[in-house]
Image 1 (tube, rainbow, N blue to C red):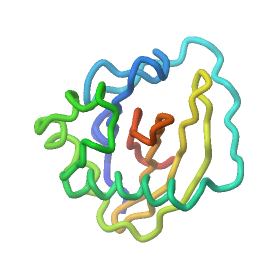
Image 2: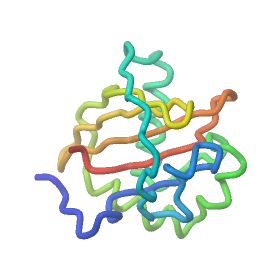
Image 3: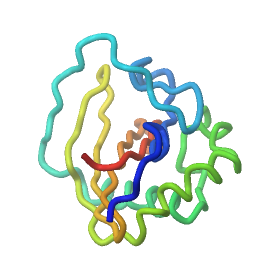
Image 4: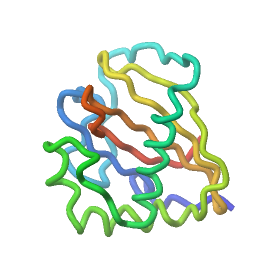
Length: 149
């Protein structure tokens, strides 16, 4: 059974650094990003990313499910927005999907030249997409959870 989303933003969590582009930037936690106003670049789906990236993405999903983030994994500019209140709002939504049965790479998109990876988690109570991007130092600069289409 797939969790029901009472509102567009109910199961969505977005945090982005403005470097990623206004098209994916949300002003606060739990808000839906504004619509893209310019044509989106074509999505690309190269071969699966390195196993370490898949493991890092799954680690972040599991951290959000448990409500215990390691802020050292995130860029400094994003950390203040990941306070206890934000985690308390988002974690139950992600946790509602239940235990992860499978976690796999779905695709890679370019958003104004920045690679955003999409991973799909098939969980006990539904399927969830995690969109995530890392900077050159390996720190999370964007993360977004949504019900899978």
